[in-house]
Structure formats: C-alpha cells, structure tokens
Length: 79
Image: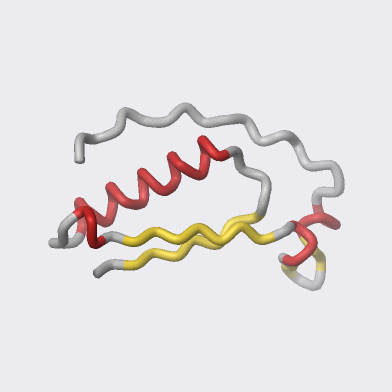
C-alpha cells in the first residue's frame, strides 16, 4: 500500500490541495503496480509561524503573503 506524505505551508485553496492530491495519486498509480484504492496521500499543512529555514520562519520571510492564485484542476483521469 503506497503512502505519500506531503508537508506544505498553510495557505493553499481547497481546490489547489485537491489538485495536488489528484496529481500525486495519478503519479503513484502510473509508477507503481498497485490498485488505486490502495494509494494513500496525506497533506500536512504547517502554519507559516511553525516552519523555519535558517532560523527564520516563513511568516518572517514573507510578512505580507501574496494571495495564492487558484490553479485550474487538470482533466481528471477516470478511476
């Protein structure tokens, strides 16, 4: 049973997260010999104040975040 865990900074739209999950699921399905219902994708959204690089949080790096533009979902492959 393939399991993929994605850690991403908080701030994406539900549509963007759904597209991400779909695209990762499709990539695993193409790459690994398994059934679609066996693929698990977990998305962990981390608050920008809880993620740091070089002792600087994302909130400090980008104090006024640019609104995230929604991404059009790709054509969904039939399951």
